[in-house]
Length: 108
Image (cartoon, rainbow, N blue to C red; front, side, top):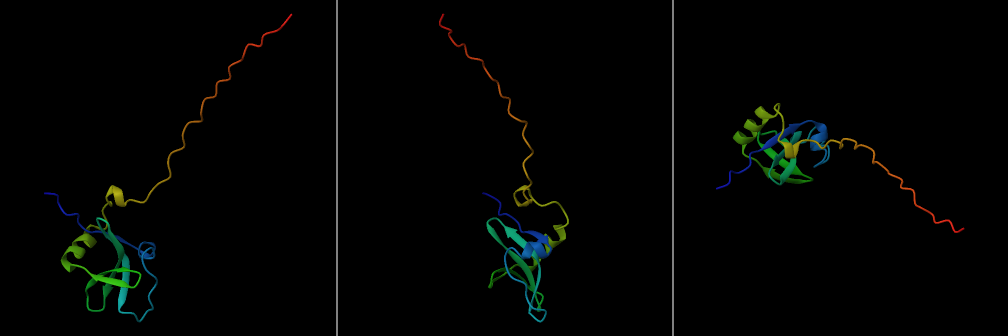
């Protein structure tokens, strides 16, 4: 039986900005970063009540507090490879061009 993927958290403004808009200072949500579990991705926010939620636009999904706190503790470690930012490919060696001379028949 396949193991369920765990939650991955990345902190910072650029992370949550991909999934939702900035909230006013008096809003009940405090945006922390992004959260991911398999194909489920969104902004991570904490409510005034201390609950963690996933935010995608205006859609709010409650999250398991214990599992998210565990993911927050691991947030300083390296993210999994499929969640790492993409890097530019290394430049390839220039192609080798070979010019073959053609024989031209000369009529005499």
